[in-house]
Image 1 (tube, one colour):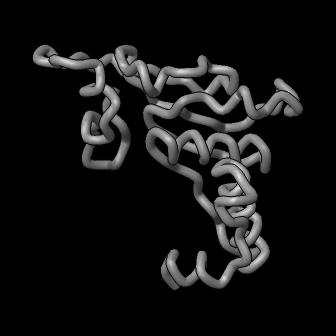
Image 2: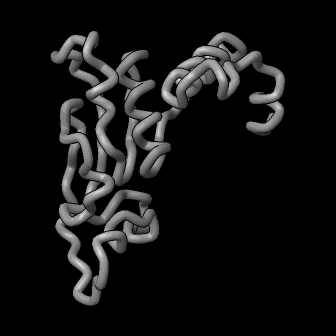
Amino acid sequence: MDMTTIVSKQNLPSSENSQQHQKAEKFYQALQADYPNMTITLTGHSLGGFLALYVACRQRLEATVYNAPDPCQLLDDMPQNQQLKLKNYRHAYDAMGNFAGNGTGAEIFSNRRFVLARTPFVYHGIASWRFDPNGKIER
């Protein structure tokens, strides 16, 4: 089953009555209800990573994201000592991905530098990440 089919059959909130982070959590809850034995993996880049971290914190799940702003400002009611397995791989020079601090404690910085980087946005793109032959990130 593809994501379009899954999304269209769910009664998810519309843009008029819900924020993206609330939609993401409701989407996760709908998937979990329809597929209770499925392992759901949370990942994303930038805004997608922000939403994945938010859902992971609220639902006490693991998440691996890239260059994501931290959703801690939306998690005031969450206990600080959750001991979740959260990974937010960031470039030190990425102004967008480093926005909002590290309230979730997920931050892992890359050591990579781009000699010819003309703008800080070079560090924000998902294409700036490299992986070894086993799929592990090269920091």
